[in-house]
Image 1 (cartoon, rainbow, N blue to C red):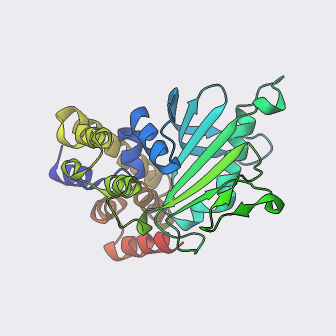
Image 2: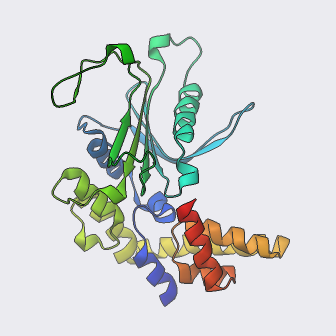
Image 3: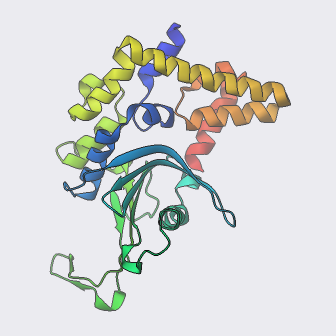
Length: 276
């Protein structure tokens, strides 16, 4: 292990794709779902990471996290910190694809999967100044509200819920959601509120076995990038390698070294991804 890799590992947060895929376990995802959905009855049976759903006639997708509860309840948790990847059409496509993938021949219509999709973002996609947006399909003719603007006994279609959580809108760490956002954005386990998340981060940053695992993962990413570079040996390939590393949450100086691009170019790529 060299100092540069160890420094990069210490900078990782749970919202960084490379680190999240390793560190977040079933208990951690269960906690995240409970808090963001205001539902402490969430109790997952299993969790899968990097799930690929192929469509012979449409578009294949890769899911960050897919969890199941009971016979037909599915949860898809996504880290989408670039606007192009967080389109609401994508969230709906995820829900549709999961529902189709896990439907069985002979199931009754009422037995089809109920899918909950959560996109964690760091911008206000809908520009309505809300920290969290929960989309349930209601019949607009049957929506009644009380004097506080809360929906009263709406008529609701079953089958899906789509949630967008904007991390940049949570400033109050006194709330459960605020504390969770803090922990997901925090790189130091000693400063985290939730013990489950603290343990996940501590394992891969403070233990010899954990840091070794992260170093091996980073080595694999670097070797993959170098192999692609040898295959094409083009500037475009280096740019694509740098973009992949930035999306995976690797620090700018690390990306600069291994993509062989000038730091000005890497910073520009990072800025373009944020504004995309």
